Amino acid sequence: MEKAGFYLLPLLLEARSDHFYEGNEYMKYLSQRIHSLRKALNITQKGGKPKTSADKRFAEIQLFDADRAFQQYTYLRSSQRQHALRRLKRALQTSKELVSFCESKDHNNHIFILEAAAFMKYIEGTFLYEKRSWEDSLRSFSSSRLAFQQLQRSLEALSEHQRGVFNELLAQIDSTIRYVAQRSGLENQTQSLDILMLANVSKEDLIVQHIQVLNPQVLESNAEDQAGTSSITRITWRDQTIQITHPEIVLALYGIHDVQAGMDVSTTVDDRLLGAWANAEKTTKSVLDSISPESNEYQELSICYSYLAYNLIVLRIQRDIHTQELPAVKNSLANLRAQQSLYDTIIKNIEAAKSLPGIAKDNGMMVQLEAQIAIVKARRCQVIADAYQSQDKAKGLAMCIRAGQYYEQANDYLHNFEENPLEIAFDIVMELQTGPNDLKKRILLLRSLASLEMINQKPKDLSLVESMDQYVTTESEKPLNLTQLKLRPIPAKPLFFDLAITYLGQQTEFGKAKPQKEETEELPSESKTKGFFRSLLGRK
Image 1: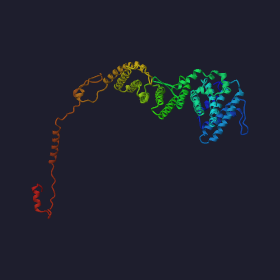
Image 2 (image 1 turned 135 degrees about the vertical axis):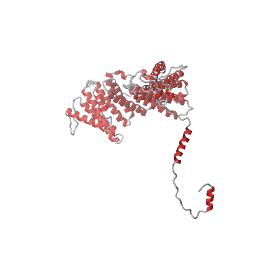
Image 3 (image 1 turned 180 degrees about the vertical axis):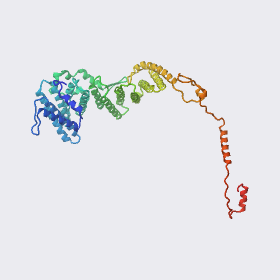
Image 4 (image 1 turned 45 degrees about the vertical axis):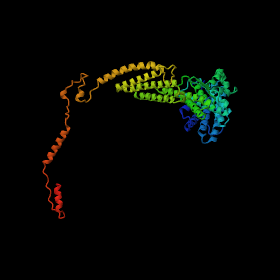
């Protein structure tokens, strides 16, 4: 970036993006950077009054010195609050000296002064925030946000990572302004962030004076924007329009508006927007649980909750679709698994949407959700078919046929549907016009490939009867020769063979000579009557 334009902001963003945002290592880096600059300007010292320089690089020393003190404050505020406040006061004093140096160095360089003033107002707002001076803190943060918005319009030369650090800083300022406005009074909650910022910026402010030279249109509060703020709290859902008046829900709705206003048109759904919608949905649910179901406010808040929960699910689905990156190898196995996991997640989210209280009894929404599920299942079947296509054409063909059935099911759902289907995950109308036709061509191709695969498949080890049904398919194979087949005899009477083998075994036992028993003398105790009964029983 050129020296005549931005000077301080790129240095700060580069330091914060290339090193730890918080912690000792980043503070050590700032100390080394300050020492190197002092050596280059020949203003090093061991004690006494700090030396200054008229060189423009002296602004870098003051910038890094103020940022180092501010990082020390963030590092110590949870454990040593008093010491942290002293470091924060030191950062505020150094940042004011930086603004004075920039004005004395080049009074006509408005961007150079605006960079220093934006950083100084941010530190000043933090200091007043710690002192619980809500109104003064709101004015300082509003001035800082106004300056950063003007600087954001000319940040094309920054890298993507530096823009991420800058957007995090703006998001932190927006959330702090909304919180400080809540603490200062309920009348400030029901305003958009831009109107709230312009209402708390004084015309005598240094930042306002330089912005009037650079871009005075930023300071003009458009009447259309004033009227458009009332539409933020007006919700239209399924031909029903309600006006939200509950302070907590209004604050959550303005949080969504603030995040959407700070995003570019080309920016996809990010975590900040999802967090804002989730916060609004959670807040509405907690308020809804504390109200009696018989009241009129309960019915209105039920519509609001269904609206917020449904849009949160749709944003999650769109975020998952946009964040999936297409690799160089489109049909790789890892990519196919990722797509299948994506479709499974989409189906789970749509099933969760079906259980919402405002949708379960709405036949039109249920028909659209069922059609969306059928479309997603058809796509998932085609992804599984892509995975099987290189290994088994028959299984790939079966999955494509099932995908065609899901397309027919989605078409049946929307056959007598008169409304325009909502685009939840995919455009149903476009999908039903192009998807089935492409799938029919693919089914015809897979049928041909599967037939060729079955013909060229080598026969398995079959029996004689099964081999008679197999024919020669290639010239390299020889004709079927029945004389060379391995025939296996099947016994007709296995019981007869078992008896025969048993008989032969007994014949071999009969041929053996029986061993003679040794003669033993009869015991005198045995009686003759006992031997008589033994003889009757056939015993010796």
